[in-house]
Structures are given as C-alpha cells and as structure tokens.
Image (cartoon, rainbow, N blue to C red; front, top):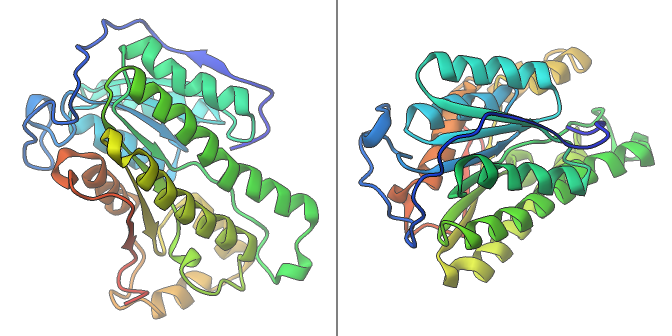
Length: 288
C-alpha cells in the first residue's frame, strides 16, 4: 500500500451520527443481519487495505452488519469498485486513497472518517505489503525497509491516529490489527514479513495495556493460508506453496477472505467487550 505521493480524499458529506460516551451504543443482533440489528450497528469503521482480499471482504461485511465504513488503500480503482458494491447493496461507504508508508497520508485518512461521519468507533488495520519469498540473506535492504515501513510503521501510525480520533469522538472503541500465523513461528520463506507481523503483535499488546483503562480495546488476528491476491502472487513465485501450506493445516484448505473478516468483525463488536490484548489465530488449526 505504498507509492502514492500523498492523500487524495474522496467522499460525500453525511450527517454525523450522535456521539456517545460508551462503546455499547446498540444491542448487537445476530451475525449476517444488517441495519439496526447488525453486529456493528451504529458504528463508524475505518479499514486499511480495503481494496482487495481480506480488507475488501471486511468492508462488505462491516457494512452488512450496520457500520458506516471508510475504506482506505493505495489503488483508487479497487476502492471505488468495492465502495460502489457496498452502496448498491444498501450500505453506507466512502473511500480515501492512502499510502501506509506516508505518515501524513495515514493521519489524513483516519481524520476523514470524522469529517464524513462525525466520529470513529472502530478500526481494522489490515493493509500490508508482501516481500519477495526466499531466505533472509537474499532479501535486499530496500525490500526489508519497505516491508517494515508498510507492515510495522503503518499500523503504528494508524493506531496513533485512530486512538486520537476515538478519544475525541466516540471516547470508547476497538481496534483490530492484521498479523499472520507466520509471525507465530519460524518463517524461512517470508522472514521480514513474519518479523514485522510479530512486531505488530507486540504493539497490539502494548496498546491494549495502554488504552484499556480508557475503554479502547486493541486486538489482532493471525490469519492462516487465505485466498488473497497476495497468496496467489506468492504461489506464482513459489509453485505449489498453497498445497504445502494446506498440507500443514488440519482443516486441509485455505480460508476464504470473509472467514477472516468474520473474526475481525467479532473482535470489533460489543460481543467481544471483555477481549483485549489477544492475537486470535484464524488458521484452520495450523498452529494447533
């Protein structure tokens, strides 16, 4: 999600929803419903990496569950397509072009949620970049720096801005970061990626301890093999890797992006109101 020169903000004005001092603003309904009875009803949600893969699936799901969503990513064409799809299904969505490696872009994107909707309740920091697969001594310094800038510094910047926005508006809320099952073990194929994601786990725990007293929960999800564009790109460079990973997974298959998004939605909802500081594995049993 890097490479853009800076923020380009796109959206339409909406009437701000009422500010509340509690995370428990609505009675959550059963998953799969929408509107007032949805899992995220009444909440404003900000999502990075929302143009494709897990992020796009999450944007669609969050909107179906009643949230007003602001999608952020680097590629405007992808963001526009997902946003239009959500609107066509009756959801409320806007988008902002954002470069996770650009601090000003990240802050502007988060602030846009407040400008559009009057508040921020929850955030899903899903945006990431991959690395050329291979041993760590074969990775260039430039590639290492890029992975760390997007996958570690990006979530750090986003969390700082999100906490500030939640404090100033909803006052209580929740944040979910996307880690990886590859951060929970040796990762000889993707060593820099795994290291950055393991650092995100540490940031998640530290943020949970820091902001818990304010009623801001911070968790992470650790997806296993998931059928995203990033995974297919890896499989093209390392033929057979998906089959190898599935062979290490008790459920014997890769996840659909929406299966990962469902876990994020639960962690952001009031259903998980006593859960913070955890890294939830959504990996088909790979690390069982």
